[in-house]
Image 1 (tube, each protein chain N blue to C red):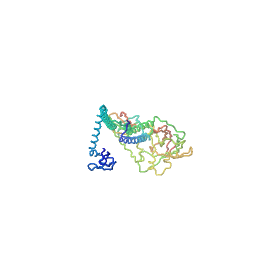
Image 2 (image 1 turned 90 degrees about the vertical axis):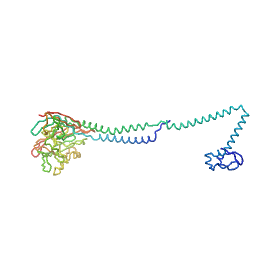
Image 3 (image 1 turned 30 degrees about the horizontal axis):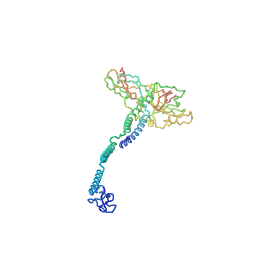
Image 4 (image 1 turned 30 degrees about the vertical axis):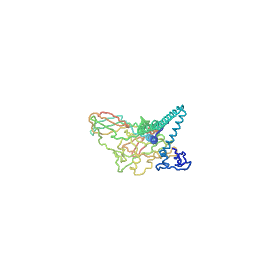
Length: 309
Length: 149
């Protein structure tokens, strides 16, 4: 608010000039020892120089009255000014209300995007359920496929071709069979003896896609005898047998077609056994496992302490 | 007015996306592990059975067929026999093979893939005139009732 300078009588705004009159340099102290900044904020001049303001307002009123007296027909304009002020105040109130409403609206009415979050929650729940449920189901289904794949009904039995049995890609030829005496610490089943069967094995073509099993014996009484495992024979045999465990890897390493590898297998059979058939299996394989396709048989007799094909 | 996701929802979404990725990798790995190595158990079917009373006990003979591509080693304990009073028929004189013995296969019955054979053993005398046999083909339970001669 402007004040009138005590020195020169001219009006100026002390808040803008720190109380110094820009016309004569007279200084006017702020009321109640307030700083100019604080005074500027609180506008202390307003109270201190209220008289001057009132005087100014009084002068303005008197001037207006004089004008009204001089021009009474202009009353309408004065009325319109008052109405204009009211309209202006009303407009300002509406603007303030609109600003307030605009400040509140973003918080209350602005739509939130939760769609991706909901989608991810649903996806996570589905994946969790899948991790728990799908592997066992897939494993069970795969196992059923593997069992179905391996199911065998009346396999093909191929008789010996001359003195050899062929279960592709291997060709087996019997080279000997002999009883092995055992007097070690392990108890044998009553009436059983250990039979060593010697074979010459060759391979035509590449390695099969399945691991060939050791051949087994079919006896005349309808029973079967599986070959003893390598790790079992390590505890039974006194001397190392170079042909033991040669099948099938020694056969894989053969370089010349028709070349044969000596392989030996051991069986626990009844001591009175005179004839037996050694059986070789051929499988097919896929991702579900193997399937027995063919059994090649090679009969032989055991005479005395030896055997003949 | 443009929709906007709150910051906490953004953080949760990122974490959930990472979790989904890990779960997807785990799911693929689990399925791959469950289907990578085929397990083909021996499946042995009982095609016939007979039982006769003897002085030592009841001799039970089972006719078997290995209808899988895996060789089977069978023992009497693989079959469950009950009499009419639903009492379990224990084997007489049979012993569990000592698998530390390298000759242990001499006490079991071998049935190669695709072959048929028999297993015979003695049991305690049954109550009644018939025996009920239970056995498993893989995980499927099967049942056979046969008379005692």
